Length: 315
Image 1 (spheres, helix red, strand yellow):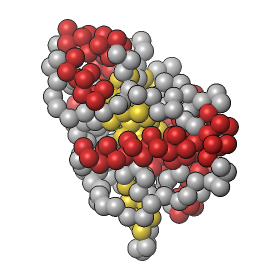
Image 2 (cartoon, one colour; image 1 turned 90 degrees about the horizontal axis):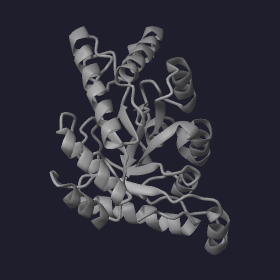
Image 3 (cartoon, helix red, strand yellow; image 1 turned 30 degrees about the vertical axis):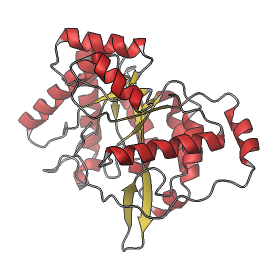
Image 4 (cartoon, helix red, strand yellow; image 1 turned 135 degrees about the vertical axis):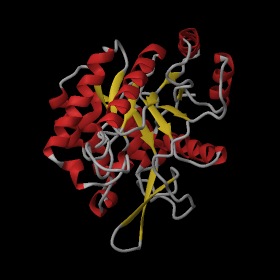
C-alpha cells in the first residue's frame, strides 16, 4: 500500500530501551497466559488480479493480515474472489484507506471526498475488511495540515455529520468506519476519540489506533508504556485495526519527534504487543517504510519482541 500523506525521514538511530529485568522465560510464561496471537501484516508489493497470487505473496512474508488488495470500483466478482480466498487462507484484510479531506473548505471538494469515503466503506464491507480508515481532515489547503480551525467546535460537529452520513449511506453489515488519530486534528487522544464515538453514535463507527501519531509531547514520549496502556484501556473494545511504527525524539528545539522503523525508536513494543494480545483478531499493520528490506527488519523485530514477552505473532 502506497501512502504519501506524510513525509518522514528514514534513518537508523538509537535502539529501544532494554526490556524489564525479569528473566525472559518467567516473563513470557506470565504474559502469555490468556493472550491472543497478534495478526501481523504490512504492504505486499505488486498489483494482483489473481487472489491466489496475492495469498502466496502474503504468506511468503509470514503475514496473517494484509491491506486491501483492490481499489473501489473493482469488479464485484473479483472482490468476492479476494474475500473468499482470504477467508480460506486465514488472512485478515485489515483496512481500506480513503485518505482525503472530508473537511475541505471548498464544498465541492468536500462532497467529492465524502463520496470517495462512501465508496471505500462499500468496498471494505464487500471484501470483508475490518474497517475503512481515513483521517478526519483539515480546515485548510493542505489536506492533513495543522490549522487552528481543526479544533473549532463547528469542525467537531462537521466531523460528526460527515461520519454519520458515510455510515448511514453505506449501512455496512460487518465493516466499520474509523478515523486514524493525528497529532494536530481530531481525534488526537484517547479521550477526544471517545468524545467522537459518543457524539457520532453509530454502531459501525470504530477506532483505528496509531499511537505514534498521538505521542506529541515529551511526557507521552518518555512515559509511552503508560500511554499505550491508556489507549488500549479506553479504546480497546472499539479498536478494529492498529498501525505499528516507532518514534524518536531529537535534540532539536523547540520539539522534534520523528517516525522510525519498529525497533529504532523508543516505543515500548513489549507493552504494545502485550496490550494488542488482549484483543482478538485485530490486525497489527506495518506501514510507511521505504523498502521491502525495511519491512522484513520491522517484522523480525516485532516477532522477536513477541517471543521475549510470550506473545505469539501469528504466521
